[in-house]
Length: 137
Figure 1 (cartoon, rainbow, N blue to C red):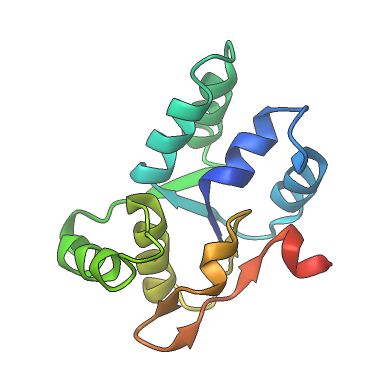
Figure 2: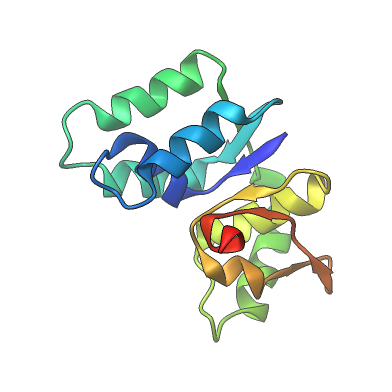
């Protein structure tokens, strides 16, 4: 399983994006389910709003089962606590949701372009496994 952040999802759709090739390869090489949350989809939709059919392709991955969307409706308290803890970073709602998903699926790395995930910790002090281009330098 891999947890999917907004950056790679946008880069997957935008060939001009610096990390497009990396995102395509990472997405294609994911052996298990690719999981995200509604907050990531919302951010992605906003960022892709000017590209015709780009978000439609994202939803096609959801509809086709390649991307699974996990609900965090029952985790609002945990997400809120994470955002409060990292208010100085600051932590976006989608990032807090991904950290929460990482707590629920501890073996799953987060596929991200966001270096803030090197600062975030799950369950207090645990380092979050990441798949990121900045980790390949």
